Image (cartoon, rainbow, N blue to C red; front, side):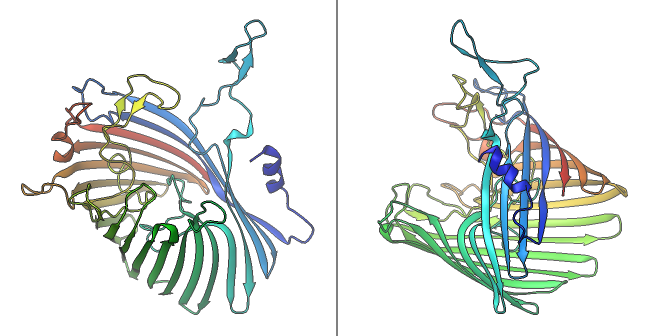
Length: 442
């Protein structure tokens, strides 16, 4: 996306546009870890790592009339590290391109602008029609999560035709998506159809999402059912989401004749007073007892369902690359056991929040998880470990907030008993992490 296109977004548009509204945020983030290698003895231990990154999300909406609107999302420097695009010049003598570490600063090209979503909506007496590349959100967000929170990193997006309507508290939507466009003229597209129905009021809600994915050329088809519910009873709020996936066929990875049967679920409950909130979240995601066979039993939560600072949030263990370069950024993840997103896990996360001051909130949480399934669980399922996190959030003014978090991970047997055939073992060291986020929302 070019700077001229961004300038077009900033304009109010043609005379027919009645209103231009904005949503979005800028977020600066600092990260520090010691160490994501979970080791002080492994020969490739990374040691301390730290970084700063940007993210600005712009979500304009052009309200053309009571019958039509246009929507877009543009991300500026999404997760780009500070100093990642140094300004350069060509040496007139050698002809070499050289980075400038002076007041010239960073490059001013449009490489940091990414158009991520754009869609149109039309409003009729029977409901709303939407067409284009749009965000996907359902329930608590363990299956579909739009990723629009400043602490999110991914976001689910679909090229979709959707119809939705509401009668009082009852809502219905239907959608058709093209999830993968293969060669034009061949039946190799991955497509899906969805139907959702539910009831939602201010204090209660329940819904059922049905999604059917299919790829004719691979004889692949899969059904996903998602039940979601929440209730608020005075100071108590509870939310539940349970997902099941069943299907089979051939995969793009080359695997043939696979059968899929996977489940995941989450229950979150909280009791709140004026200053204190006591909460607990528990959940599960099924896993494969034999990852090498043709049966897929692993369920993965959406990666934007965040539960901890390090565990199921960062790649573990991350080692130091033998030959650092621009593509690997000095890191080797060949020995990685976990990445983003809850998967193959039984977990529990109790937490307590307290308003120290009207504008300052503290949260202390404990996350513990163990394998749901594995190749050998005769001696008990191996635990992923225990993580304790503490965060402070400061809201000095409307639209402005700062949040600092720190945590320590004590790795479980899943890591301490692991040995990589090439990169060895020694993944038993506690790891601490820290994160600082400064955000302006609008």
